[in-house]
Image 1 (cartoon, rainbow, N blue to C red):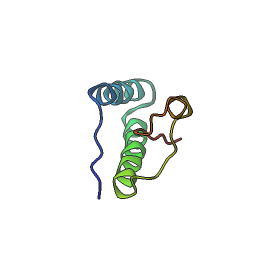
Image 2: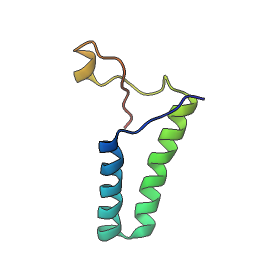
Image 3: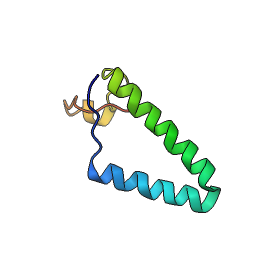
Image 4: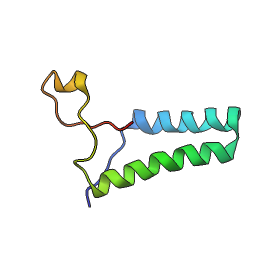
Length: 69
């Protein structure tokens, strides 16, 4: 299993997303949304080659990052 690291900016963005969802949709929906994100991160640790390379980075020859939709 591979390690998955979040940048400090990403961790902050997830906190802000959670706060926004809690305020506008309630804590149950916020928990659900963040749970889905955590599931993707877990699947990434189990299958690190999953996902696609962002086009804008691939065009620059950067292949260190992957994205999920």
